[in-house]
Length: 188
Image 1 (spheres, helix red, strand yellow):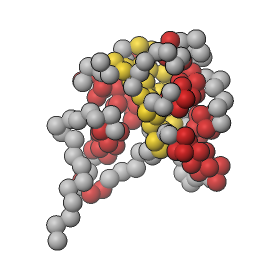
Image 2 (cartoon, rainbow, N blue to C red):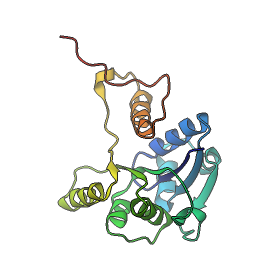
Image 3 (tube, one colour):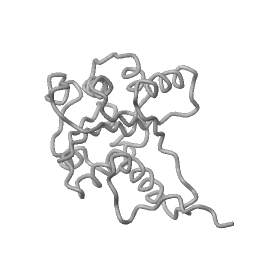
Image 4 (cartoon, helix red, strand yellow):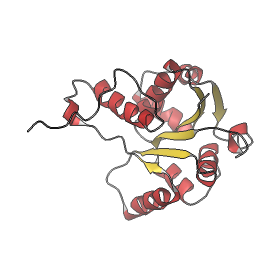
């Protein structure tokens, strides 16, 4: 059975993490959820979701200060981690090996164990420091995947944009959804 870690940190775009959990629940994927303190604040300010309800979408939930959680060890087998959204604070902590939170520690485990790590950074404009941290993480094996809209599918709603990005992320784990749409090509 596939096991995925989902982390929601304090950047705008918490709906991406929530939607990932909803889609993974549909596929009966075992999920381990971490929500940072600022992730909870973003959820409260951006969505109509209650954090208790979001936590119930996951198979397991851990507080971001629970550094002794089973998922913080490389001996616990899991298939990948998605940080959606990924704040620049979290991205910096991961890039620099500063594992003072469970999110950063588990991402560190992903890198050292060569497991798939998807980071969805949400910030604009980007500074040289942000870009250097992203480059460092990409060179270490992480996939940097900002949640950027795909207009070639002619989205009609914000949900269309969110869903497309979520399906693209899940396709990196070979998870397919019949309703997912991808680049159709251009007819000449």
